[in-house]
Structures are given as C-alpha cells and as structure tokens.
Length: 90
Image 1 (cartoon, rainbow, N blue to C red):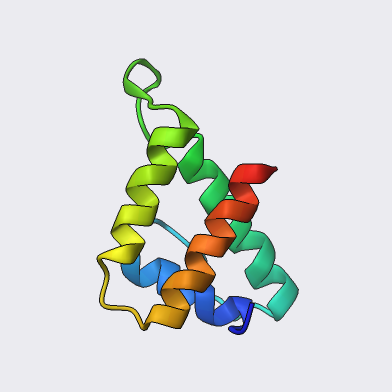
Image 2 (image 1 turned 120 degrees about the vertical axis):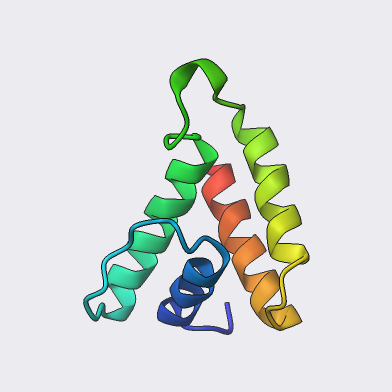
C-alpha cells in the first residue's frame, strides 16, 4: 500500500465516525493492527444484535460501496478496499 496505516486509519475514522477508536497517538504497527481489527469486527458484524447480523460477504459489499462513494481520493479508496480484501481473505 502506498499510504501509511496511520493515514488509512484516519480515513476509516472519517467514513465511520461513530466507531469508538482510541484517540491516542499510535505508531505504524499499532495503526495497522487497529485498522485490521476494526475491519474484521465490521465484517463479522459484531456491532449488530446477533439476530440481525449479516454475512461477511454482505458486510464487505456495503463497506466497499461506502468507501467507493466517499469523497476520499481514489488512491486512498483503493488502499482501504485492499485492506478490506486482505481482512476478508484471512
């Protein structure tokens, strides 16, 4: 990826402002870990009541759609979508 993970984490915060993420300063490895943790939790739909949770594939679709329709620069969109792909493949 061309962007540092701290920048991608900030972009993630802009797209999902209601997610409670740490406000302290993180180094690159901590930013990467937190970004992938948040993406994985989102794909598992952990913030939704268990009876109405959706499959990871559906959550992936909605996340990519949200990233693609955002006002982020195109290279940032691609980097975030790549992070989602990486998380989805694991």
